[in-house]
Image (cartoon, rainbow over all chains, first blue to last red):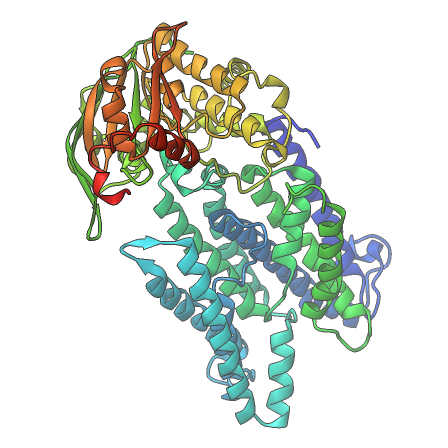
Length: 343
Length: 287
């Protein structure tokens, strides 16, 4: 595929198109689901919905759909950024260990009963503990992977992998201490599902995520040059160490926020960047914001699937993203097998 | 391309060690605008370390490096990248950018932190590609290119930096002979016409003899010999530094040195006919 270098016009055109797509997905996600509400009602035309429907719509479904969008966008942006600094299109947001730390925090909170609405931390005890776990993981991984003041890609990957494996073992250990009821909650949490949090919490998460994504976006041109290797980038004037460290921290915060809010939702941060790179090219100035919008739309749809597939029961959204994302990723890889340029 | 003159590259008493291992010892050299200076020596003699230090990516050295009279240590990275471009030994491409996008990365040190490349930048990049005989590669994904094509794209990227000095780390090693000559002609013309200072690491002694004004011969982290090419390229110097037997003659057409490696078989045959003098310093290790 040939394309001319990125211009501000092309960037804007794509972002507008993707914003429209996301808006459509948000509308769809809010309108559909158990207890269908017509699109007209949603837009305030026709008969106003009855009181129960209104509560479902505004108090339960809309905040959940919005949270799905924010988290899908965050995971994808983190995936793109990690792929850029690790110079590997197969990296995902979970590869550097933060997800392990967040899971430990969340699972521990469930074991200690901090997830109940009447507990010490209100309704968001699990989320708060998981985010704390993510922060601990971030600092531990950064501390271990820093050698002589430098964060090397190799040690970073290795530290992340070992940290995740260790977290896995620790989680099994915690599970063996849990009651049957707790175990159910833990398993469901780990498989990833999007909760209905209050607007203020969703707003806070959205604000933090957007801030981090904007900061990542400011490094987009550095990411482009970084694809020439760390030495090549440094010879063109990129402050490689600073870019790597900032990206690791911001990407880990985004990932930590996502895992803390909704558990482990896989494949979003891998498949969406991959697909977008095929369509849009490799320029991170486009890929990063497009990834945020595209990932948001993807997770809104996946969550809709999670709510609807076995309604009134729910499938964990992490299962949906893996079931859709896994085969789709393999299909893309196989289709482009001859063009080694993609992988 | 800029019509301004090049920057002198000066290195004085440079030392560098990787941990315990001394990689460079008391290296001094100088490249003036308009010169093509060859840096030659066996593998591991410190050439790449020297290139890294000169391009500002390896701190922690002792000694002085000056670029256009200014101390390298005091220069911001982007400033260095605007003055000096590097053509690396093995270019890395992690994502399928197009060749033109790769060349445009050469404009990085000129752009504000969030500017888009202007029409002027694109024009500079296209001209750079054209000068490297690679304009037809502009829209191809760089990972689909042959290694020779990639090398030309990387050379074009260096030109797009509009540098005052050029460091080339074996720029011709992956190229076929025609493209070797073309790249080296280009390097020569940048020195001759734009008065760039060019420092080039070469393994091909004949290319060095043909293109370089002066030569620094390195061995074990030190400059062993230096001077005008015809003075440095002697049988004694070359066999001592490279520790192998060579056939050295004069190229009838150019009057320059002609160096041919000799296989073990040939050496044995010659030895039977009339014993060769052992290469001076490596003598004790040879039969």
